[in-house]
Length: 227
Image 1 (cartoon, rainbow, N blue to C red):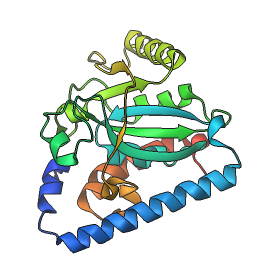
Image 2 (tube, helix red, strand yellow):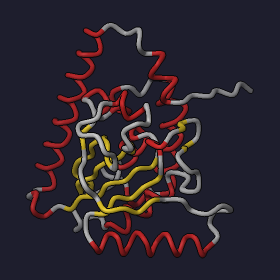
Image 3 (cartoon, rainbow, N blue to C red):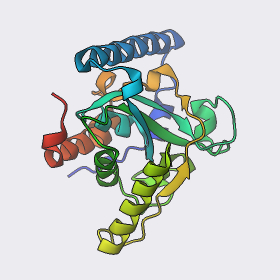
């Protein structure tokens, strides 16, 4: 059996040789397809933005989290980005250096009539390890911390309640280290990070890291999958 270790930072370093023209093409394609997906979802749900709520989660690599929440019924749009830091408009390179204080996060626009914040929290807790500080698997650094940025007092209450109940249940052998903090600002990540798994599913990181998480999610949350 061959053990394949893949971290996102190492994977990204291996892609540095790609010509800038190719990267630009990928960025344009990613942006276009991401926007197309969002518009299609908005049209099919026949709702307005005033009827939607927002959730912001950090659970390791945002490519993974984005791919999971794109499958959730009631989620209208998903964006990868950065929150919780001190530098305005940070770049991916700056965030990876660990000097800006940002976490990689996924911002989720959802229809509360179809999926509740509690259900989004359930997915959050089950698709990553909330007991590893500043780490998920081989992705290590403060940017990969487990965090919930709440937008309302109700979201804060539910997040703290869920965390307390899970801690008391002994679901994990180690203490839960998930940070629960007020949302301040969300900086959308570079275009090539958006809709990443759908556009780059054959890449090693997607195959060895993201796909297993998606398979697990689809098995556990069959009744919550978008059609």
